[in-house]
Length: 343
Image (tube, rainbow, N blue to C red; front, side):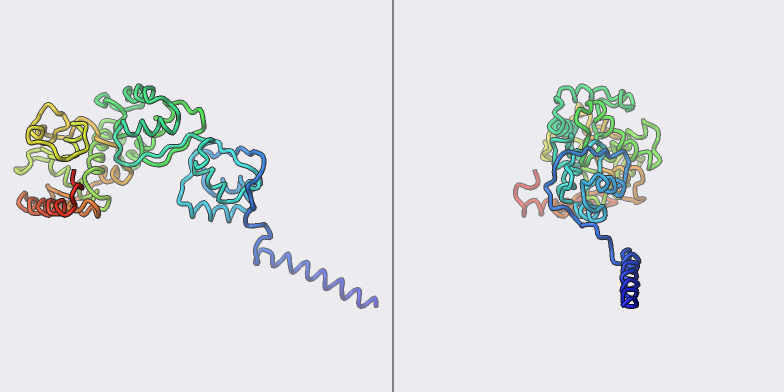
């Protein structure tokens, strides 16, 4: 009998030791998720530049989520990005609900707004106003003082510097701090491309804003190269950019159907048909890819380009006006086949 007890004791001990040994191999006994919806309130701070792994660990330690690893999988699947700020969670939330809090879906807890690439300053300020509750008048007043944000003297406002993307800020963040954060994203991107002088940064943003408006993302590098080629002395362009997107910006419209009189109007400073060189300022907010293209354009011999399909953004490049005109005919044919699209 004693021998039997000793045998059982040894067996139980072996099972326990074996279980501890196998536990790392077989996986944790933590649940993968809480059933939710959760209770109470837990405030978790996401620091500037903090990674998702660190945030997931915080959430697990605060019992907001059951398992940092499975939460990370849910967050990664969402395709979202982290933004610094204070976020209010419940304890024992479902992973998907906790992800929604971080992505600003629970917008009562944070200031949230999204800016698309290519928006003009008025459109960007309107989106910021709607997301923050800050009056459009206060935002415009700040935008009209670009020197406060480090822009050069020839900048009239923050046009071109309000970085596209999803943005989240703690409730109560001052308007100037919000705008400064957006400007910083743009300036940081320019500096990462080796452009540190504010005046040169401004020219790069002007070019990037035209690149953003004039081509599909796959062609940004070639469009930027062609823009710089047109600005160089040559017998075809004489320094005139001749871009419709700049003309319409100066007219305050978005229609490319402007008159010949408007095309010849030098009083429109953004009329790049009548005035040589770059327009006096950006014509919208360029995204990162457009900024990078303006900073490091592709080397090419192109002087002309035209997007011949507004759905696919297929863009044709040319070295001569005759070749360009043949592509313009393709664009016109596409417009005829798609009534109402080429306005």
